[in-house]
Structures are given as structure tokens and as C-alpha cells.
Image (cartoon, rainbow, N blue to C red; front, side):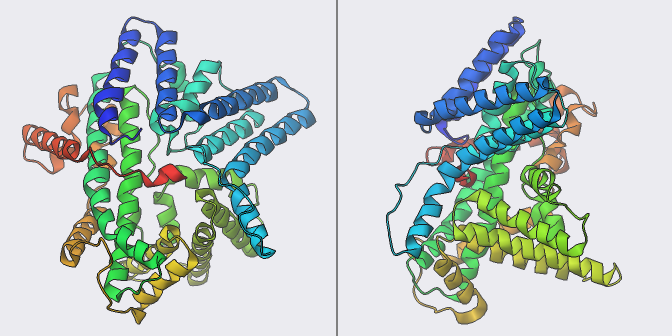
Length: 492
């Protein structure tokens, strides 16, 4: 089930909200939590019910292992249980996501093809696996585990973040779920949640899905080996750069909005990454929850920057390359991660050599950063190395004017929409800045009745005008809902 689908907006979400809050108002906390767990299982199983037992089994095993680690006092046994948990989680992820890729490449080395049947990858397996790995590690380090199975089930299954994140940390989420289902929810949560959800849906439905029309035909043509003009190659690459940002950040914003409707706060996952003037800054702004996970549970355990520059650079490369592989079992994903590892090494090396004395002008630094990001996204999106190299060759000036790629709308319209999207991504406050999340929940600068439009007051002459604009935006999104595009990160 998609956030941007009619059945979600007019069926699943209102029914779930009504049930949860009625139980909450009556003081039936356990029943409210059970209703939320059941709704989350329906949401997950809507896509493919065959894997509901898999995610429940994963939750049961990790909950049991966490409780065992917490009870044990002997360090050696505690570590052995942790290693068992890591092996089980990574083994599950490896089997479903990487076994076919490994066997196909191994078979290709010996001239054997079709060596493995294609497995359907369970939805969100990368997200709930990483989340539970962090839970086991932190329990081993001494943090309090979940107090009961209901809270742990909600921590993993809560449907707004289950499918595509953000990757939440149990230290942030378990205390919230422990108190979920009690009393009435503050109106500020409902107001801000609805606002953020609608604006996030606009990013997905009105921006990402529209701009996708100018990316998909270009990459499809490249996959078929068709010659591209330089202009079309650049259009496709930049369009995908914007599509991915508006799609994924829009989903994250919608998840935050839905979470607030149930009284749950999620961490911010994007902070205007295309405003970055260095790759280091880009990764502080892009997919923040994944960056934090990779830093905490991979980069630092490998040694981080504690063992000299060469070791630091090796750790950066390993972390980013594995981060690329996390996104998908393919050489293009692996190379995308490798590229960003190389970018980070160059960025850190330049910073060290220059010692802060030699800086590029801000505009040049931004342009260089975005050039690197766009080039890397070509590999991320392309179905093969050959297709990616074909697009990059055309972008470098080796393109063939050829014919318009099949399905590509008017070029002038494409560049106009890309310009509008780029202007929004680069020069405007991001959605959470506009909505003042999470500060707007607490600061009392306006009454709860005005909080739906707190963030829009910068753009509108009055709260009333902003409310009308928000309503029109919601109507425009709903008009597009019968044909929503799949969220890109669902496949990861």
C-alpha cells in the first residue's frame, strides 16, 4: 500500500486513526497498541502477504536475543549471543538480497547461466534488519531493552516508517511507544502532522512523479543501447537527481506527518542536501538516518579516524562501498558507493592539505559537489554499467542528436520543470524548516488552531490565505492519486 494511494488516504489511514484514538480516549492503552500492530501488519502484507511470517519471525528472534543479552552477566556469553544475532540478521539479508547476485556472478565466471532462481526480496528487509542490528548492539553495550513485546513490535512494525525508513533508533522510539495510546493527543501533533503529510505528498505526487517523465525515457533508451544527444543525457541525469530527492524526502516527510497523527516523532531524514557545498556536507544532509547508522555501526568499529589518515581513508571507502551494496545487489550500486567513498577521500584530503587556507568560492564548490552527485546518480539509476557509461559519454559531449527517446515529453517543458524543481531544492527552505518541525510542537508561538499553517506564514500574507493554499494543494495531490508512482526506495 502506498502513502499516495486512494485506498491509503481515504480508507486505511482514517480508519486506523479513528480506531486508535477512540481506544486511546477510552484509556485502553494495550488495545490501542494491538490495533496499531494489526494495522501495521495489514499495511505490510498489502504488498505481499507471504512475507508477514518472515518479518514476525525476525522480530521474535531479535526480541528474544535482546532479552537474553540483557539477562546475561558473563561477557563472553553476551558477546556470543550478539554475534549469533548479527549472523542471523546478516544471513537473512544476504540470502534474500544478495545470494542470487553472488551465484549469478559466480556462474558467469564459469560460463554457467541461470544458476539461481530469482527471489522476491521481502519489502523493507534492509530497513528492519539494520534497525534490529542496532538494537542488539546497543543492548549488548548496556542500554535498556524493550520492556515488553508490544513496544518492540511497534518499534519495528509501526507502518509509517516500516517500508522505507527513516531508520529509527530504539533509544528514541521505545520511550515513545511505551507511552503510546494514553489520553488525548495534543492538537499541535494533529495540525503539524496533517500539514507535513500534505506537503510531503505534494513533493512526491506533483514534483517527483512529474519530473520522472523526463528521466525514465532517457534511462530506458540508454538501457537499450540507443544513442542520446548531449542535451537529452543531461536532462535525464538532472531530472533523476531531482526525482529521487523529491520522491524519497517526500516519503520521509509523509512518514513524519503520519507518525505525528499518532503522537510519534520521527527523526529528520533530509536537510536540503542539494544545498551542500561539499560531499562531506552532502552526507550530513542526505538520508541522515542511514548515514548515522553506517557511521556508528560500521565506520567507527572499523577504526574511524583514530588510526591515521590511510586507515581513515580505507574505512571511508569500505563504509561507502558497503553502503552502496545496501541499496541493491548490483555492480552499479556498488560502484555508486565506491564513487562516494572516493569523493569523501578527496574532500577530506583537500581539507587537510589546504588547512582551511584555500577555499573555492561558494558557487564553484556547490557546482563541483553537484556535478559529482549527478554523475554518481547516473550509476545508481542505470540498469547496467554499459547504460551508465552511454549516458555519461553523451553528457561529456559525445552524444548523437539522434531522435527523441520514446516516451520523452517536450524538451522545453522538461527543462522548465527541472528549473522549477532545482530552484525549490536549492534556494527554498525545506519542508520541515517551513513547518518548524519539531520546534513548532513546543514553542507556543501560535495557538494550536494556527499551527497547521505555521510554516506557511513565511509564504502567505495571512494564516487564512495559507490555509486555503494548503487545501488547494491537497486537492491537486488527490486529483493525481489514481495514478501514483511507486516510491523509489521501496526496492531497497
